[in-house]
Image (cartoon, rainbow, N blue to C red; front, side, top):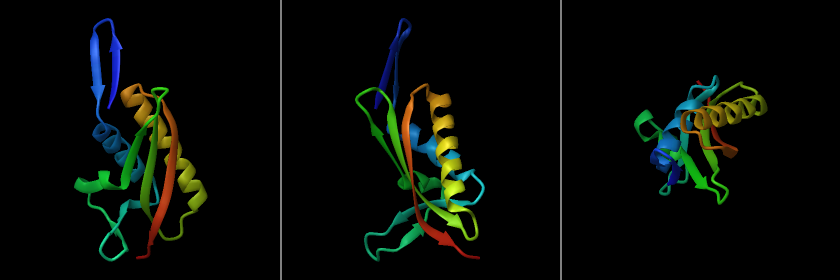
Length: 117
């Protein structure tokens, strides 16, 4: 949880807020099929539904007041993975910092699977 204090009072932002914003920003990028999570039972990567999207996002609170975000995604077949990852990093960083006022130190994108339709 991050606490921001000013002359009017205090604002507390939980990690769930950051995961929801980051997950939404990532899945809105062209070429992203959705968030992914590796199953502990079979070891396979599963595409997460919208309501459990936050399982594919983890947030780390840094000592300097910034946050670091890790995203596990499933992508569409045929997209340029490097360009897609750079786009996601930029979009997630911008959306999270704009919505919360908290600086984003880094965004790590893990492409766990490719969806072939």
